[in-house]
Length: 145
Image 1 (cartoon, rainbow, N blue to C red):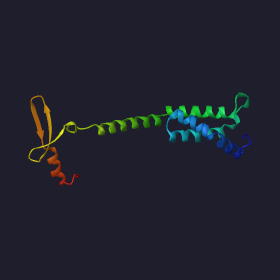
Image 2: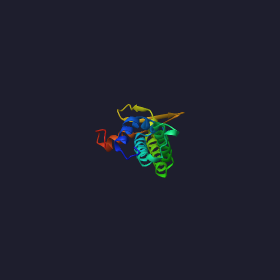
Image 3: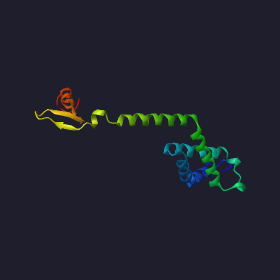
Image 4: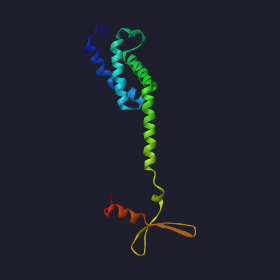
């Protein structure tokens, strides 16, 4: 690879891409980001091919060191931190949307005259409203707006 032989890079990629991707995925936890780390690792491998010293270790360990450092750099980067904050905000919005309304917890009861009514009995009194009848009136009785 030191003689700018691109086939050597292709051989390295074919041999170690799975290992590097797996390592990157374990660190960043996202397949898309892991692919980015994989690509950057081999790009840096190619650009820094003169810095490889066989006396310091084998090629896979050198590649894993590059991938590890790149993955950590990615996690520390500002754009990644912004993506994490955006995901957290989205998760909060989704969680809030999934919370039931107060009326969803009220038991359903059919009235004696055939009117559908919601009823909630608390203590001695009874609170009744005609939510289903109002829903039918707004939807034309078809069950959807």
